[in-house]
Image (cartoon, rainbow, N blue to C red; front, side, top):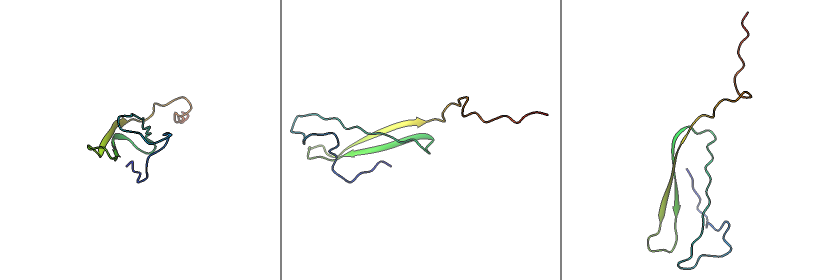
Length: 77
């Protein structure tokens, strides 16, 4: 669950004025997660259509094995 109950001002030099645009950067840490993921981000503001709920959806797959991560084979006698 992505959750923050604090004002989001990261990267903004000042508050946005009516009609201005800005960018919100989010990241998803997939460590320990597998399969379909659906995370929400709620943006609350003084806009008439507030709050806005954004969904980040994706499928976390197991990383492909590389020579460094392949399990060693048991020697055959």
